Amino acid sequence: MTEPSTFVKVDNVAKRWNGQLGVEDVCLSIPRGAFVALLGPSGCGKSTTLRLLSGLELPDEGRIIIDGVDVTDAAPSDRNLSMVFQSYALFPHLSVAENVVFGLKVRKVSAAERRKKLQRALEITGLLGYEARKPGELSGGQRQRVALARAIVANQPLCLMDEPLSNLDAKLRASVRKDIKKLQIDLGITVVYVTHDQTEAMSMADMVVLMKDGRIQQSGTPEDLYYSPANTFVAEFVGAPPMALINASALGGFDGVDKVGLRAENITVAQKGKGRLSCKVTECEFLGSETFVGLEHKAASGLTLSLPGLHNIPSGETIEISFSDNDLHFFNSAGNRLANHAH
Image (cartoon, rainbow, N blue to C red):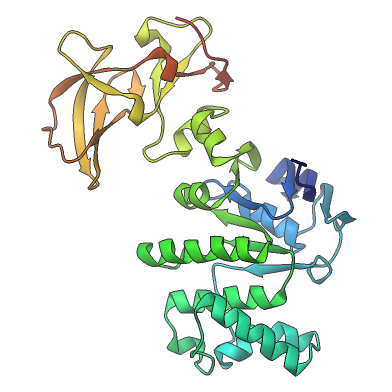
């Protein structure tokens, strides 16, 4: 199988405002047709990275290449991309149809071609029959679909999306998430998608780029970040519940290891006197198919046990837990991942 070609290359890009860090040393190689999620907490640099890709901001250092063309200093209109933002940015006085084809009209696309593209975009986004409505007559989900339809008719090979679902309720978010993913595959476009929601990133993306303080912490497949976190920040950010971190000394010590990481699904309840750690139950969170049991131990943070079905263990009760060394992740005092250790 041939390697997919690099479609977007971000090469050592930095952006600062008045000496304040925006992003630093950002390097990305995005294959054609990939769905890439830029993930991270507020202020981590993910939206700045997207704005640099779009041309809404220009970098202080580094280069941006799209489809073999150096666009580092190019205007947004010269980058062959479409954008979908958190605020739908629809014209309130125009109908759905007029909003969708507005950009085509500006680019002097013929009326027949506009009609054809409009029809297809409305079909794909489930908006047939809404052509004459104004944005004020639509729900939040429908308005976001209009913004998506507008990106579809632009027919650009690269689509940038900045938190497009954050104004929608949870149920709608899940359904529009599926729409966007299907759309990306059907149209064969490359999507760069900014989100602070790791569930969104993990369920939609082929490649997740996790950022913190303007720098990339790790980029890879969702499985890479989940099963092989590069550092303790990634370990605690990715996964629901996140990975627990335990002081290595509490487990009898591992050479050169400061913290040990452990996922909820790898923890079992042990018989009294047979466990590796004795913990206090802090809460039980029933989610239908499973119950998450929050645990407290002085040498650990974020300890959670996952049990199938419904369980009600009283808060304050002590239980012992066990786990295999094979399921542990090892981190040094700088918080960086170490190759798996033997005890």
